[in-house]
Image (tube, rainbow, N blue to C red; front, side, top):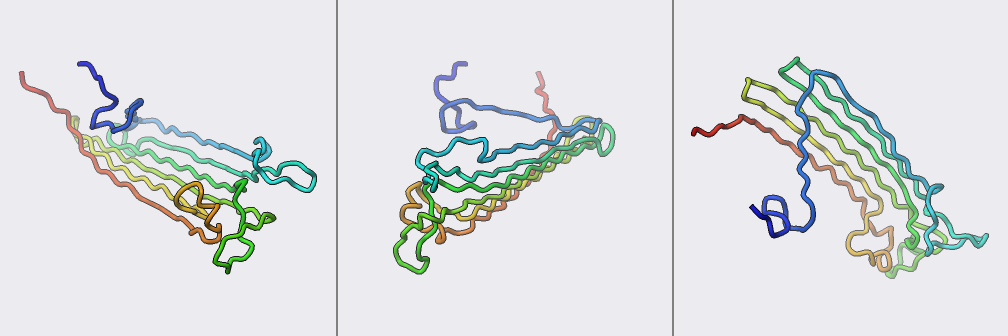
Length: 193
């Protein structure tokens, strides 16, 4: 058959590619990995709109971002049950070029203090676990859990223009921590011919 539109209703309503990845459900070997990812102001160019310091040079963005984590998986009972765990943590802070604290936090009108940039901080961790049980030669049961915890201070919701009108101190501390649970039972079906 020929597909003449973007994606089907099953895969989404936007144009572009659709990737369907299916991970292995278990192995009788223990495997895993660890990783580290670092971004720092020393590796970045300066923002052309950044404030100029007393020496006439543009100030850096103050970026410090660190992300690390790992995975591990293996057997619980050989050829019967397996587990897989993953975890990553990202923390960071940045000094946005055009976001300043207020001169007077009690004032009704936001007037930026150009000597005091706002520090945008975020902490994110993601964790997941999958347990797989081969109940019979045909029946497989999988349980999956994932959590994505985000903490961002300050959180100025809305458009990119909000820092012009809203003092960073008026932003809230955004904390979200949704959990996802899934229980799946699969059994191959065959058609009678």
